[in-house]
Length: 168
Length: 166
Image (cartoon, rainbow over all chains, first blue to last red; front, side, top):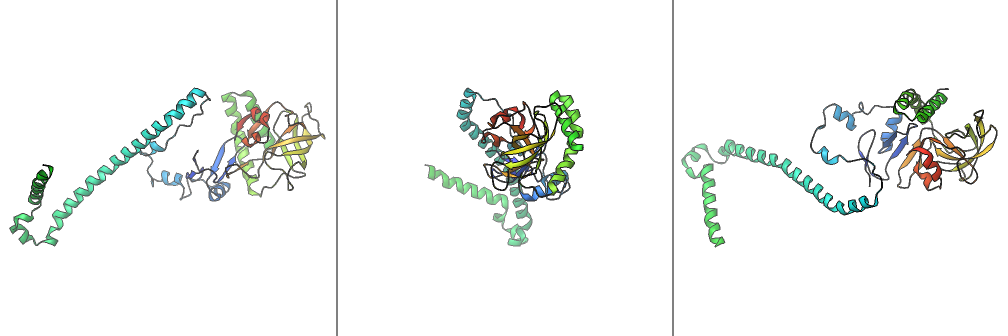
């Protein structure tokens, strides 16, 4: 199944959708829907029409350089038919597919990592700034058990104490 | 005028088959084809019916033919159908002479035609390749893009002669 890109709006064209126009010099223009086809017939420039991908890229609304685009890139070199190559390819598809999905998974995981760190940092900051809403500052100063580092130490100690008998 | 000039230019370019010659000749031809194509697309395109004039895109000697009968379909012929036509313009020393009645396969049609997967395809102009009654092409070359649906219509010979398959 080959997924093409619309000439006008750069959206994906799934099989059975849209119309394609073949110019006399054999250049093929594919359109995802009649909206794009009509705009082409009206000789509109996709770079000047605001809802197209070309406009958004050109005017800095979208990312243009990113490692996620590497996943979308595909090889489009026609290969001469050879029985052995076809056989080996069929065998390799499973492994290639697994590698590809693993890479995508790792990529997403790495991307989400920075977000997690930022969220933790923000939470810590909020706790430091807004703890007075929960507890009056004077009481907080008097009660040593309510300080953040001590609480964590206490909890971790109780945990280890609880965990050790469990393991045994 | 401009169209005929463009077609001649592209024909020369294809015959040279050189990258440089091709580029040189395509430059003026594409611009004129663009204007021609946009002009065509302004109006509603319909079936190829009686009195439709089609361009001949092979080296049989005919340049323009007029459809006098579509062999299939009540309304007229579409992309890939066979028609009977009379030669309206021909080269002075070609195989086919002016005024002859010939068979032809429609290899390009400006009216859109559904493909097997449900999408549609349409071309810039109406063009035909002349064949004999058995379906063998009269010329030995085919110019411009042709659709791959010709294979289902048993015109594999035209497909092999064509340079571009869309």
